[in-house]
Each structure stands twice: as C-alpha cells, then as structure tokens.
Image (cartoon, rainbow, N blue to C red; front, side, top):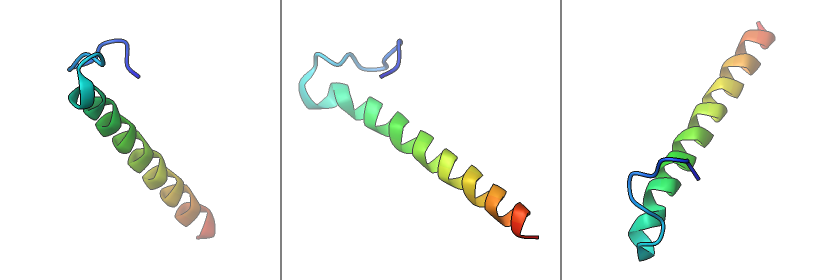
Length: 43
C-alpha cells in the first residue's frame, strides 16, 4: 500500500500485516474526523 513498506509484501503473511495496520489506522482517523465534523455541525 505504501511506497515504503516496513516489511516487504513478498514475505507471506507478515508482509501484509504492516499494510493492514496502516489501513486500520487511516480508517480510524477518518472515522474520528467525520464524527468531529458531525458533532460540530449539530451544535
């Protein structure tokens, strides 16, 4: 996913674990920002 992987993707399961961690973090960040926007607009 990222141009610079911490662990190369050609390693079986471990290679994609860092990509999954980055993706999970990005989704959580976006979800948090959307909730903040929703809350501020409701006020």
